[in-house]
Image (cartoon, rainbow, N blue to C red):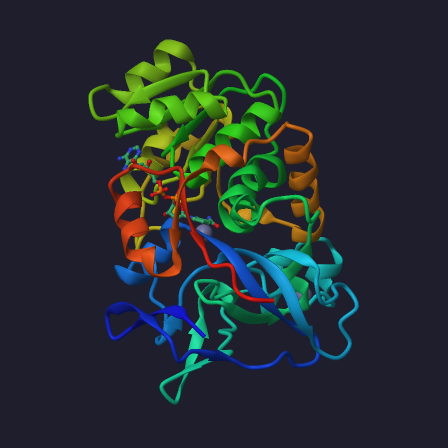
Length: 358
Ligand SMILES: NC(=O)c1ccc[n+]([C@@H]2O[C@H](COP(=O)([O-])OP(=O)(O)OC[C@H]3O[C@@H](n4cnc5c(N)ncnc54)[C@H](O)[C@@H]3O)[C@@H](O)[C@H]2O)c1
Ligand SMILES: [Zn+2]
Ligand SMILES: [Zn+2]
């Protein structure tokens, strides 16, 4: 089969890729569509170190084509969105509804692929820039088959990370003022999560002025062009005491600092961006004195089997925008072009149309 593999510093299409059959508790999925997230680019540029060879891609949707022994949650033919949490489904954290805290969900590198006689890793437990992948059954979340695959795929990272950060982590409530720094695939979904939660105002910040239209479409009430405007000054004009919640959706220490400095008393800074491993950020300790909070957030603190169907229902009811996230589609081998278009700031999301045979 075909897949996009990163190996020895190079990204390329391989045609001799294979994936092993599902073991007990696993399923094999024929990938139909896969979104391109900045975290895939971060593996290539070394921001996120990952062993190689690795099949990239972690935002995918497809059709279950094989199930291992003991799998009762999905059947062959089910349409699924893949979660990146390879959680066990049985430990205390899973039982408590915190699958992103499951010790199996992070750092247990899955290696279901083979190419050129070598085993290959699946990035983020997924490896969806390939025609087929084998994942834990807990990762395959069945969805309504009426949802087009290219929009369904985006739920698997960008949408859940953004909306989950608002609902599960920051718990934004009616009338809270928010700033969203970085209007990419993640930031747009934070913005629409805040719109659903009735945050006000919702202030979007980006260095790319072309992002204003998208930001407003997804629910921003204001847009600050950080390439020409003093962000702190512009936010204080709108919210003189600072904001209740500031989301950093880029992954830069200076922006994390900026987000913290924008907080009102009692405010919360949510860090979603992923800078280079080992990066440190600083803040003035006294600045936090008035009950301020800094929080990390992995994968929207998601409960995929609860949150994904909820997002699908909201999409089908016209409450969440997913179609508008798909700026362009590419064939599988168009991944380098989609990464270049993302870097150029031209996309909400680029999506690879993979359409593997079932
Ligand atoms: N926490 C998580 O679980 C999680 C999940 C997925 C992605 N991420 C991370 O989130 C970050 C964003 O991912 P994405 O897919 O949305 O990326 P993206 O490339 O689609 O968007 C990034 C946006 O940030 C803007 N930007 C860059 N520099 C800026 C600055 N100085 N000020 C304001 N805006 C600026 C860009 O113009 C762009 O619009 C990445 O670091 C990614 O690795 C985290
Ligand atoms: Zn991602
Ligand atoms: Zn667990």
